[in-house]
Image 1 (cartoon, rainbow, N blue to C red):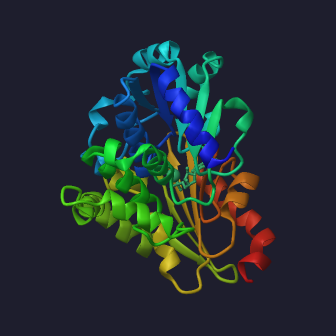
Image 2: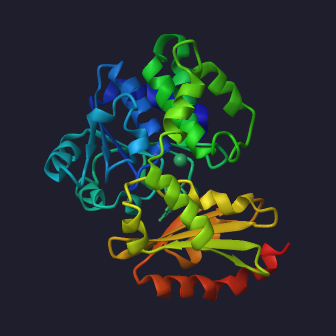
Length: 340
Ligand code: 5GP
Ligand code: MN
C-alpha cells in the first residue's frame, strides 16, 4: 500500500473508529514509546478515545516522556488491558508487525482477532493480510518518522504540539543512535528540523535520554567491555555475554543494557556485535552490524528473531553456555560474508 493511499485511508479511519488501542512491542524502546504516544496524542485531537498498551515496562530513561503515565503496562495490569482490547473498535500495531512480538498481550490479541487492525512499522517481513490499512516502510529510520509523516500529511500547523514533537524526536533519535545509522534519506533530517522549536529542545531531550545513567549502569558498561567482550578473530565479530548474576551484581534495572551492543562496533574492523543476556529463563540476543551484513537474516534463521539489516534481536530457550555455543556453532556459515 502506498503512503498516499494509507494517508487517505487514515482520514476515513479517523472518522470511523472511536475506541482505538495502540499496541507496541515487548521490551519497548524509545521508538515504540515515542511513536505510540505521538499517535495517541494525535488521535485524541479527533475526539478518539485512544489508549496505549505495552507488554512490559519501559526503561527508566524514558520515564520523563509526556504521556507515559497514561500507558497501560500489560504485565502489571492484565485485567484492564484485556478489557481495553475487548472494547476497542480498532487496534493499531506500532513498531512491530507480528503479534508474537507482543509477549503476554499475544494471547489476548488473538482473542479479539475480528477487531480491525492498522499497522505502522518499519520492520521486515510483514504479513499485510491482517490489516485494513498499513504503512510499512523498511527503509525508514523509525516508526516515529512514519507517524511524523502521517501527522505532517494532516498538517503540522494544525496538529503538531510540543508533546507530539518531543515523542517523535525521542523515537527518531533513539532508533538512529542519535543520527548515526539507519538514515536512508534526507527527509529524516528535514522532518526533525520541523519538530525542533524554541519549546522543543533537541539537546535537552538528548541529555534526558543519554546522560541520566546511574553509576551502576555506567560501571556495568565498563565491565561488559573489559571483562565480558570476546573478539572472534577471523570473523570481524565481537560478542558480550551477561549472566543473571552479572546483572544482579550491578543491580540491573530495565534499560541498563540498552546501547551496550553498539560499543564493539567502534572497533575499526568489527562488522558484527552481539550481546547475549540471561533474562527470566530465556537468553536474549541483540545483534548489530555495520555495512550490508544482515543480522536480520542471522537472527531469523537461527535465533527465532529478526529486525533490520543492521539491528536485530532473538531468543533461545536454554542456558548461557548453550546459547554461546549455539552462536559460535553458526558463525562458520557467515565467515566468508563477514570477511567480504
Ligand atoms: P534490540 O537488540 O534493540 O532488542 O532489537 C533490535 C531491533 O530488532 C529492534 O528493531 C527490534 O524491534 C528488533 N527485534 C528485537 N528482538 C526481536 C525478535 O525477537 N524478533 C523480531 N522479529 N525482531 C526483533
Ligand atoms: Mn523502531
